[in-house]
Amino acid sequence: MLRRKMLAAALATGLAGALVLGGCQGSGSKGKTADGKDSVRFMVGGSAAELEQYKKAVDAFNEQSEDVEVTFVGVPGDNYNEKIMTQLKSKEAPDCFYSEEASYGELNKSDMLLDISKYLDESDSNLEREDVPENLLENYTFEDKVTGVPVDCNPMVIYYNADLFKELNIKSPQEYVDEGKWNFEALQQVSEQLRDASKVGFVYENWWGPLYSFLFSAEDPVYSDDMTKAEFGSERAKAGLTYLDSNIKSKAFTFAGSLTSGESPDTLFVSGQAGMLYAGRWYVADFTDLSFAYDVAPFPYYEEPSQAVCAMPATPMVINKKASNPDAVWEFVSFYCGEQGQKIRMEGQGNAVPTVDGLDEIVLTGTPEHAQTFLDAVDIALVYPKAEALHPGMTDSITGEVEKLLVGEQDVEQTLTNIVQTVDDELQK
Image (cartoon, rainbow, N blue to C red):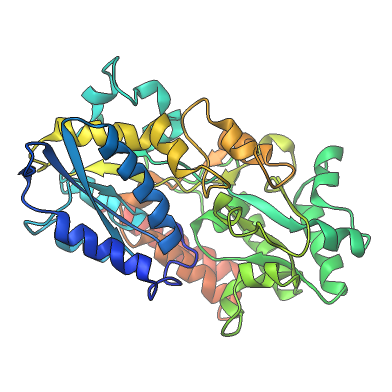
């Protein structure tokens, strides 16, 4: 999954335009470059700042590779997935690219992605099977074919305004964590205290990551192992949705979909109006110049610590099955997604968490104080359900039903009934 925040913010910047233009001009013909190197075309979307970081890794690869030259095609804005799907049907199709949730399952069903299993099993590869977290490797495996590797990951945590909690004399999330009491009840309590102080307590964004974190846990998986059954009709899911609905109605939580023009979870947080929000490490680079101290804490557990879970977006890098020289493409992909590439892309404050060993210091350097929380969260992560990847549109249908609840169009019972029916119908196809 590509990062959701502020992708369109830099559309007008010169850097974004230059990256796209440069990619198109330099693509050339597939096969060989003018100086005899194997040519690889790499495509990715993002904000201007993200594209700049990605390009650093591409430039570093090109400088050290004697046999392969990569053309970087950066796509700013929010229509990256549409462009990928269009280009895959043309002669300008990239050899490798970031695959979004919306298309990854369909690309696998259509047999458009290369099985990279043999490369992961090579002992001299820059990226080996053991370098990929087990939960992600399983999620990128379709019918015994591994078709993707993570470029990095983004386990989600609770960001909170530490100075605001001190100013209002409210016990902080970290204090609850230290006491072993950071559960849903504690989240509600501090959100209510912030609300009563005329602040925004917790900002809820309605997409699969935050939603499934409230509805499920480590002990309550979303789908059965064979992906034929879902648990949206369980008592746990009902309790989680009821909790979410009641807190939004009481205004302890604020539904991001109800914010006025110009407001967003991050602008509310940066301005000091919001006490807490739920996000990945992508905000760390943006929060370097805040007027207050902030910190992070794990997502709270439902009742018991053993239930702790967090959502973890993790975009896969994939290789076009029609790539003219897959060995050359893998040389780049294994560099970019391996230790060297991840280190280059995340130097400084970075915007993600490495998936390979040996790079913990990237996360622990600088702010926030409890940055170890990001690393700990990887072990309890909930990744995007493969069942939904294989049924495009199902996730949007689920979150769409929840949005009807949050805006008062239907109650919890009707919402869950509609979700269960929708999901069952999709799984039977």
